[in-house]
Structure formats: structure tokens, C-alpha cells
Image (cartoon, rainbow, N blue to C red):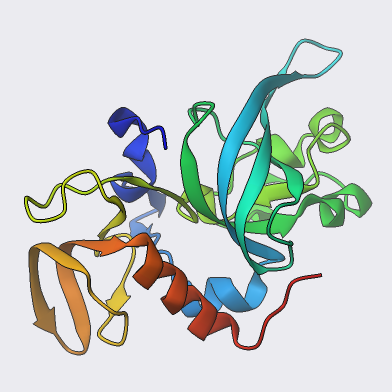
Length: 214
């Protein structure tokens, strides 16, 4: 398994949308994402290609990936294409929440005022919509969670997922493998928490319910 720690941006990225005097902090809600996603899986990046429109505009990155563990909507062992955020290296592994980009093909480009807060403009550009891969990363990429070596001394180099509770609210029912810094407040784990791949996969399956492979 190959890892690259500098790409753990999905667990540390802080996104804020401001309109007038109001601000909305974006947080990734796992139960809601599980309901609205088309596909949830553990995958490995096999290839990455920059998507360029005829005009020369950058339309993001198309990734080809092998499904290591199909949790919802995709089968284990299958291959998919998804995008459009850059920065995922070939050989890296992730848990991903994806939506079908086909829904955008039937809509006109939305104005900034009509968009969901913090939604990237790329999929709403008419020239880019036709070039998008089938699946798109959800929630500004917060639904793309890097699998990296454990930082715990008792589990060196074991694959793990690290969550920052500011971005990913963690319920107490999520089986905890390892703790970094954390405390319990009103039914949530706060701080930075690390989970084994096995336990995190188990939690996602609990959210999804009965097997939903195609």
C-alpha cells in the first residue's frame, strides 16, 4: 500500500462561505452523505488525467480507480472514473462518497447566487459538464478521505483514517480504533481522531444498511 501524507487535505481543509455579514462553515455529515451519495467505496487511484475543455479551460482531474471495497453502488473489484478535485496521487487509497455527474448534464449552468454554498464552479461550466467523469466527489472533497499510515506507536504503519471533528462530526457510535486528541461533548467525539480502515468501513456499512452493490 502506498501513502503520501501531504495529500491528507480532506481532513484538514477549512471551508467557509460568506455572504454579507453571515458565514456558513461546511461540515461533512456522514449519515446525510450516506443517504444522498450514489456510491461509497474504498478505492485505489490507478491513473489521473487533467480534463481540459476545447477553450483551454481547466475542468479538473479525472481519476481511474480500482474498487477495493464496494460499500454502496459499486462492486468490489470493479473499476470506475471519478473527479474533479486535483491532488490525489496514483497509488493512493481513499474512502470516497460520490454522486452521479449525469444529473448536471440536464441543467443549465447555475449562477453564483443559485449555487449551493462553496460548490466549485467547475461542474457548472457548460463546457466542463460534458467532460466530467461519471462520478463526482461530494461536499467540496470532504467526502474523499485519505487512508494513511497510523501515527500511533502501538500500530505503526497500519492503514488508518484520520478525522478532524471540526470538519467531520464523529458520533460516539463510530467504533474508535485509536485516539489522537479528543474529548466527548454532547454525544460527539471532538478533536482529531484516528480509526482503523476496518472499523471505519464497518461504520459506513452500518449507515448504508443492507448490501447495496449493483
